[in-house]
Length: 95
Image 1 (cartoon, rainbow, N blue to C red):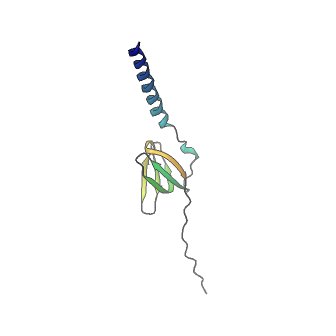
Image 2: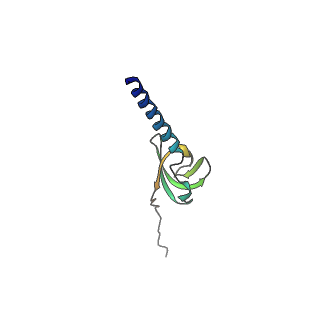
């Protein structure tokens, strides 16, 4: 009886892991994000990328940071949130 109980627990854990892995593929709706807007992207390895969204493909997104354009795989993205960039403008008063 104890072996059957342990087997059922192992099967339950395996199924829960399988469902969780399959759920990660469609957890972010990329159609709500607009190109030209600023976003903060949190990736699975803990890195954050802040910048302007340039392009959304089937498998990747392109973000323009201050230094370069970064291509990120959609499967590596944990969370996307709005990012408010404060752009410093030089307002010189001309005579």
